[in-house]
Amino acid sequence: MRIIVADDEYFARKALVKSIGQLEEEIELCEAEDGTEVMELLEAGGADLVVTDIRMPDMDGLEVAKNIQARFPDVSVIIESGYADFGYATSALRYGVKDYLTKPVRREELEKAIQRVKEERKKIKQKIENQIVARRGQFMNFSHILENEVVANEILQDFFEKIKHGSWYLLTVQSERKQISKEEIQKLQEIFGRESKICIAYFYPKNEFILVMEAEEENHFPEALLRKKLVECWNKAGTRCHAGISQCHEATAECVKETAKAYREAVYAINQRLLYPENQIYYYEAEVNVVQLFSQAEERELEKSLMENKSSGAVQLTLNFLKRCENSRDISIYSLFTSLIQLMNVINKVYSMKKKKNNTEENKSSYLLFNFKTDLYSFYSMEELKEYMKELILHVSEEPEQKSSIVKDLLQYLEWNYQYDITVNELAAHKYFVNPSYLSRLFKSETGMTFSKYLKELRMKKAAELLKESELKIGDVACCVGYNDVSYFIQTFKKQYSMTPEQFKNSEK
Image (cartoon, rainbow, N blue to C red; front, side, top):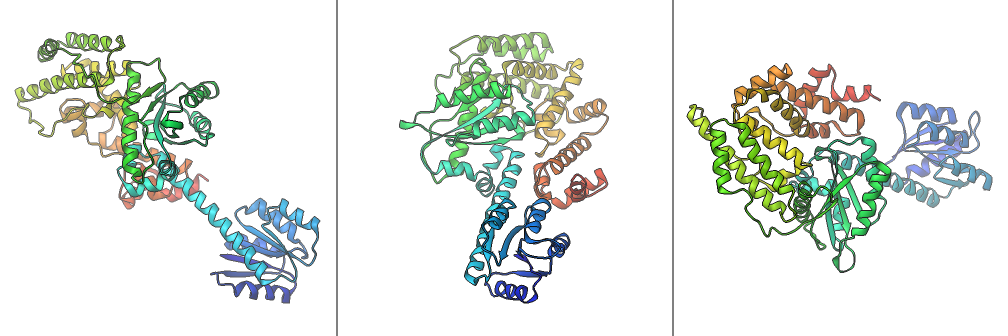
């Protein structure tokens, strides 16, 4: 600790300095003869604690405390006085003074007072560090956090405290709209965070709120409480939300593993909004009663239309299938998922055959967009899914008028996924089913810059926003926007903004 001792009486000051110096703590001591000198020392080098006499010329101890509270609120103050005056003591409390000691100050009292200050500052520092860690976590993908046990334990410690004790459910909650304002995010956090039975955190990449809720007696889900909160979200924040709920999980020390499992369940549950958008609460169900919704005859017809570049027929066939799904109350989300896999298999097959026919090198690592049920999570409505499937079919059918829609979708994809390793080759082969060089040329013609330059500038823009709006460290910002090498991040940022991230951060204060 750095402590400033202020007293205009030389021998009294030296005696206090000696007493503090004899404590076992590692302490750096400075001396001041009056209040003005205290403020000068704080301006020059700061301090953790000021121990000041109440009676001094120019500026007394209470005035010192008042000025410190106004200008250096992080500095603690202890006042010593030769008067056991209740009025002085109450005034001191008003200015945030931590202790009021009467002269002669006994060493034991002084030691206890300094120890109390130290413990309080330690708690405040820990709280701030926890807030910074949580803030950093907001800009990370929740599922990726769970892939690293060290990171998960650091960021999700509040969640894990609930998970270790008693039965619980994990929820993923999203607004009906893909984009919500900072004010709405804050309001929703306040609405859910007021309940002691709920632990909540927000994660920006997928605009999702993750909740851990304590189970009621006999492991029942507290549905009444959740419905009440969803009504509040609408009434107080103007936001209609959907919630996917995991199975009930028991207390466990395997926090990361169990949370990852519960998260997958909650994501599977909320996917049901595609079929039943009028609902707001969706429960996880085991993968049962999966039925084939897309017939073999429809598969053959879709393949024929795609091979002959009859895009209108292929689109109509797909849209009719999706319309059947949304108009039936008996179809499960698992049946929809397996049917989409069928469609994607046909599309991929046709795409591969066309590449082979055109002597285009086949990518042996080719895979489909819908390899995992969590991929449905990116669609908030059946209309979004229909539009995506329509555009995908038009791309494979080589419809030239769909060029701008590819780039539009790609720009939205980058906005959501800029922090990950993304290459134009991967996107061309596995998302848009087009030639990589074609996608590169198309992207440049529509945006005026290469894919790599656009992605770099987007990452720098997001980094600047984080530096301006958060208290994250430079290394954390680099990580959040997709740079593992902090030095390279700093060099890239400096080229973009003609100043280092640290200089930029300080210029915004």
